[in-house]
Image (tube, rainbow, N blue to C red; front, top):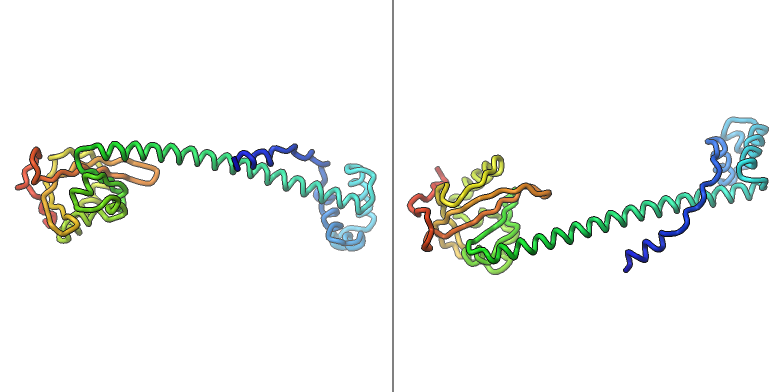
Length: 243
């Protein structure tokens, strides 16, 4: 409603363009608007008093047979109207950009909500990690697997999900993957140890998939607890991240 009112306030008739004045004629009017006499204007511009009179004559031909004060007043009014018209055009452009950003944000929120809904219905634990290694999204299964309450994983470093002794190597592995991201299916690489919030550990297998987004690379990690049944990867192949 406010946006519509703003548009209505801007939808006024644009002022008619005034006469086209030369640079010297505009200098004359601007100096007169500052209170300078014709003698002072002549000194300021380095021209004769007669030439100043000639320029006043040219201005009157373009703006009408008005006295000096009226010419300056009309000129200032015209300049003010032009400035206001320019501001209105810029405001209209800004409002259009804001509307476009709002529509884009709405579409992104809808897509994110749909994606979050899909994450929550997935049987596996899933976390989305940005290129800095920060967890942007985590479904309920991931929170339960690692012992965190709802929303607690968001903003944490993914390295917190691996034992401390493996973190340095895990950072290197993650950076190498980000440099050359490929889709990695479950069981195509060795398993690794995971760390719950309470410090307990368990072997896990992951599937990775990277997507380029406007905010940078986003890696989807599907995680399975190898101590649970129906997991194909053998826990005996635990990755030795320190090697």
